[in-house]
Image (cartoon, rainbow, N blue to C red; front, side):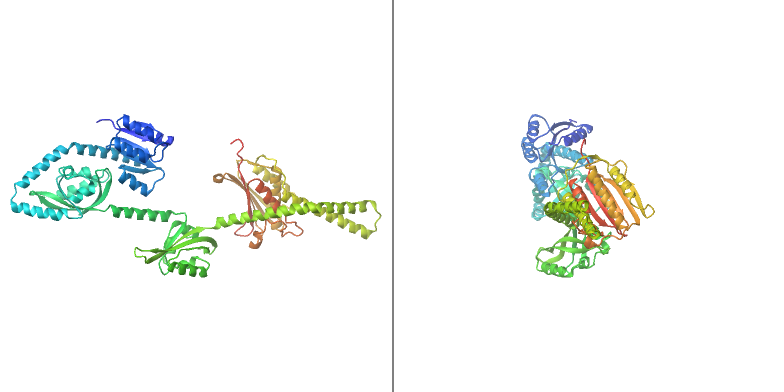
Length: 625
């Protein structure tokens, strides 16, 4: 048997290497090129049995290469491979340009192996068919001679029978043994073959390589008198190398007095295409990252995909099927507006509050429409749902950042204007205390003035630290070391019998690039807040971990205090907002500013059983990576 030669054309070096190793293991000879122009040159100058072409290539795309290869030698089979699979391009490439098959990247080697063998077998079958034309012509002449010897009445009945058969919109064929003995014009038109090319040819050569074994097994059962299914579905290979799906209804008959099979062959390619489209649509809905639900015209749910179930916290769609979809949303008023819009056959888009199985709520964007049949009559309602929780959180962070930026600018200006008069008040009061003979009451008043001027000066310094943070002095930092040092310092300020600290620090954390002193200031502040939250008696847990997928180090400070009211949580990073007696309300604002300088995030969340969790996330150092 001559050696099979395969051409590989793909601009991706990894794909070429994978295909080359596969072909080498299968004992094929092969050429390997990286662009379309080189592929055409190879076909012009060498014998090639099969070409494997990428669709997107430099200099000349795969579709143009396919056309040129078929112009040079139409017997070369072509497998198209692409990472941009589309049903439209699939049909065009297979049916219009004559490619044998179409593989979507990534594909496994078993799929590739089957496709290559099928393509080479198909080419072999086609070449054999062309070689057998002389024998076909001889057989046809013999059949025509036999017909001439029949009586006029027999010929007349046959002609009438053929007229009926030829007018049939279904393909009608007779096989005897393994060969075609008769085929009507519908068979010729649907396959592209002529009568001479079909008659006397083994019918197995026209069946798709993946289907012929099963089809032949049923045929042999029928010939031997065993029970076999009346209807078979398989693919027939057209003359151009493409295929069509057929439904074959077979029955036993006689041909020239000898047992034969009568086949009524119906083209069901369109039906299979529609079924394939339906399968694709169903798969797309089932695997969509958006929640998708269907409801009947009464508003009762009939379908929910996996993303919808996950959003609403359900594990089994049977919990939802048949239930009114309005129960899943907080606002009944908007639900009525949506139904009214859909009944008018208008689309409906809005933001609504959804209610999970556990009773919690979350924001979603709903895009709903009425599904219509071919007569423009409504048959059901469909909605697509997008969870807006993360988007709302991001908007909240952005608004907070903008607010802090504006307040920072205001604070910087205010601090600048206050420092000079405050310095005069402080120095004058101190001069009076140090140099004048004052009675006790006046001295006490000057001391109050001096102390408060110093307190105001400290507040201005904090304002400037928030408004105009100092430049960072960055180094690679071990966050566990920063946290441990902060814990050692804070432990000196509390009674160990009343406040317990729990450390869960992950060993081997990657380093963070940052300012050690400023980050220490952040965690000292967070720990002081936690001590205040537990009112001097409780448990404070400090944890560290590496978020490998996001390339972040996270440090969490959690207390078991009473927690923070929801209305306070949204203001917690605002300057001057505090729940501490005598506090300035700048501590967390400064922490937020420092973490933001480090390109990190700080987030405060309530704990389910009471308390507060503060998460600080900082990017891993890329120095030396």
